[in-house]
Length: 179
Image 1 (cartoon, one colour):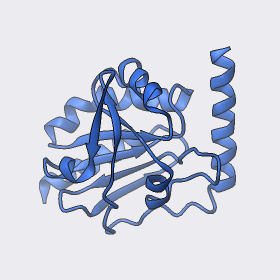
Image 2 (cartoon, one colour; image 1 turned 30 degrees about the vertical axis):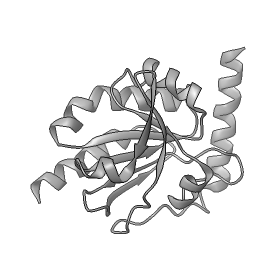
Image 3 (cartoon, rainbow, N blue to C red; image 1 turned 30 degrees about the horizontal axis):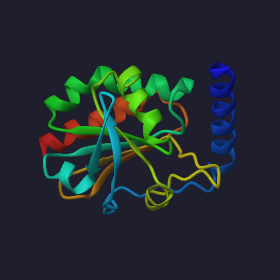
C-alpha cells in the first residue's frame, strides 16, 4: 500500500513538473535569498531552522524536492548524505526542503538523509518566495540554490532529474572558497 501511495505521489509530482515547467522561473543568480525560519528535522529530532543563523556559519545549499520517500527524492537525499563530508570540508551546510509534514521529515531524516543533514518544512510562503511551488499541488520543484554567506544566490540548478544537483551545488560551494 505504501509503495502504491508513493508511486501515486511520484506520478503527481512528475505531472506537476510537466505542467509547471514552463511557468517555473526560479530566483536568478545574484538575487538576495528570501530569509525564512521553519521547522526541520535532523537525525529524527525536530528543531527550528533559520536561514539567517545558518548563513552566519557559512554558505548554505538549500535544495527543494517534491515529496519524501519517492524514488527521485530518496536517491537525491542519499546522494547529498554521501557528499556531506565534502560540503562540510568546503564550509557549507545543506538543508533539504519539501512540503511534507514534520513527522514525515523526522522519518526521512533518519532513513534517507542518513542523519547527515536536516530537512525542513517548505511552507506555501517559502515555496512561493523561492519560486518553486508547482501550481496548487502543494509540491515543490526540484531546485537547488547555493546561497553565499552574504545572502546572495550564487548558483541555481533546477531540473526534475535528481542527478546533477549534488555535483552542481558542490562545485558552486567550492568556487566560493576560491574567491
